Structures are given as C-alpha cells and as structure tokens.
Length: 466
Image (cartoon, rainbow, N blue to C red; front, top):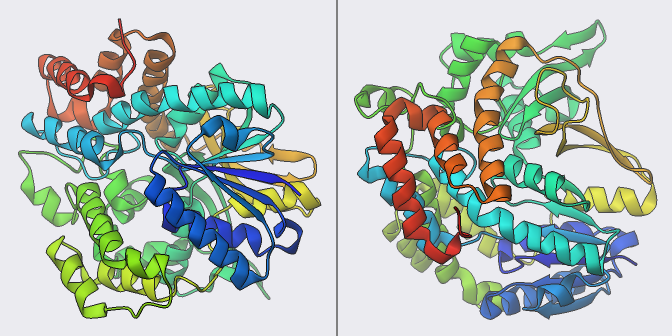
C-alpha cells in the first residue's frame, strides 16, 4: 500500500475532501496517511477527521500526524502540498493593504499581479526545500501540488528539482460544469478540450455527440451572452468570450486582475458594470475564519448538535453572503458524509497504482506541448494517467490571440521565478513592471517604491535578495 503525505494538512476541509476521495477506493483503503502541519491544533483536528472518515468508509489506513516534514515525507510514494506560506495574517493582508496605499486594488492576489508575485517569492523557497527533502528521503515519489501561484511554483520546481511533479487545480472541470449549467446541457454529455496556462486556459472545443453527429456547443454559450442571461458573478468571462471567441477557465474575479481592462481607479463604472468584487480574497478569508470558529466544535465532535442560527449570526458579522452561509452550514451538517469531490489528486494516485487509465488536467512543463508558448514554462493540458505515469497531450498551436494574452502573464511568471532562483532583487521590479494590471495603474517610480515597501513589510517571510 502506498504512503501518502499531506503537507499543510491543517487545511482541514480540503484535506477531508482528498482523504475521502482516496480512502473510498478499495485499492487505497489501507494506505499510510501521513499528515503534517506546523499548527498542532489544526493538525490534530485533521487527524480526528481522518480517523472518522476511515471508520465511515470501513477503511483501515495507518494514520500518522506530525509537525516534522522530513518524517512525513520519508518513504512516501505521493506528497500532496496544500499550504499557504505566511498565512492570511500577516502575509495576505500585507499583499492587499500596501498596494491599496498606491491606489492598486486587487480581487484574489494569489496567481498574478503584485500579490501573486509576493506569494510566489514566499512559497518557492519552501517548495524547493521540500523537494530537497524528497530527493533524499523519497526520490521516486510524485509531488501533487495544490499551492498557488501554480504556474510560478511549478516552473521553479521544474528548473531547480528533479522530483516528479504535477500541479493540480479545479478550474477546468469546475468551469466546465458551470458552462454546462448555463447552456442547459448535462455535463455528462459534454466533451471538451482545454489548454493554456493555469487560470488562463481556454476551452478549444466544447461539444457533444448527437444522433446527427457532433454538436459544437459554443453557439449555445454565445447565446447566453446575446440573450442577457449571463450570471452577475460571471460578467468578465463572458465579455472575454465576446472579445476572444473562447471561454476562459478561471473565475471572473480572478481574471479581472490578470489583464489591464477591468480594474481602474479612475473608472468606478467598470467595477459596477462587470460586478468586480474588490478585496474578495480578504472577505473570503474572514468568512472562512468565522466559519471555522463557528463550526469547529461540530467538526471535532460530530455528536454535538449544529446551532445553525449561531453559525449564521457569526458568518453575517464577518461579511458572509447568503451563498457563503448556506455553503458553510451545509459543510458542517454533512461533515461525516463522504462524497466524491472533483479534485484530480485521488484519481491520479489510483490510476498510477492500478493502471486504470484516466484523463486529468495537469500543470506540467511545456516541452513541445504548446508550440506558441515558451518552452519550459508551465502549461495546463490534458494528461493521460496510467501505470506509465502522467503523460501530457501535445496541443500544438493555440489561437494566436490566446497565446498572446497568455504571454503577458508568462512574462511576469518568468521574471518572478528568475528572482526566486537567483536572489536578484532587480527581477522583482521587472516582474512588477510587466504585470498587466500593475502597469495599467502605476508609473515606474510607484512600482519601484511599492516593491520596496512590500519586501520590507514581509521581512523574514522572504529570503534575502541582493
């Protein structure tokens, strides 16, 4: 049976989903699960949850919990990363608040932009330290990375480590389900081909088989826009569909900060027109913290009754929407119920262990996969997984407008990775200069000053730069 290490296991809800996915496979039910986190309290909660999941499923894994990363990965076959360096406080708050002093506003700040750059500079050194541990203690293991900024993290890993890896996200399969709902076609009937970079991949095909042949579903997607049926929370992506002809994978709030067109301090009308939630990640973090505080007793002890009015009260005080409240309350009320998630991690492990072939979407090194994106950058493409490993699909040429847009993001990724691997401070400025949103809002002196302020504020959370 394989040993599977969870690094950052204090992310209890996410860990719970992956554990349920993994242990629901009979072939993986006796695996060794090694849970690791630096927060002993959260780690212990996840251990209790893992034990309950195993009992519920009738599985018999060996469950370990440790704050020692090297102990967790020693002898592992799979290592799953799911951490946030610097946490919500202080690091994420710094990434939002200091740019706001310059008039630079963000929505999520975990993938690109000045927030994504700083998050990468905090995260890459930790990932590379982990990779060194793996090279020594489990050199044949597969690293399954869920940590953002995905593209930068994976690019750095591929340049600086020989550890096998794949970056995993849920935007491809998640957005496909959203589109299916918008056009009224069951997702089970739909076949799609998607490619690009993480959070900026596009559906090159979206179709289904009918008795008359293959039906291209893109006309139905365009019809949603033409008929004014675009969901309020998805206006940016449908606008980009109109302009580019293809639908992008990541959400409207994410995408709005990858480009220079939607968030402008002298154009509040754009924020309203496209319904862009500024500081959205801050709001979500506050809601999640409040949700955890309101539900942790139930999570730790399933025999306790759920006080729904109290949960709702605490969540509303934290700025939760009705959707947030319903979602968090449902999670708490169904925490002992095991339902398959749409995360790829368990399917990859199962296919590698059993040989059962599956197609997943993975973030991998571009070695001849997409011809009009730089070799060596991180691309998101369909991959076949079986006993032979993770085998990416060659896509060829992307439509030129899509490749050109991706290149504006890849420029920032490349320079950030260069800064992380060389320690050269100048490349942090260069990355910020070329970031589409930052450059649209700030002049060069402001960008330089902003970078200096952020480096100083993050302090020891960043490695030294020269």
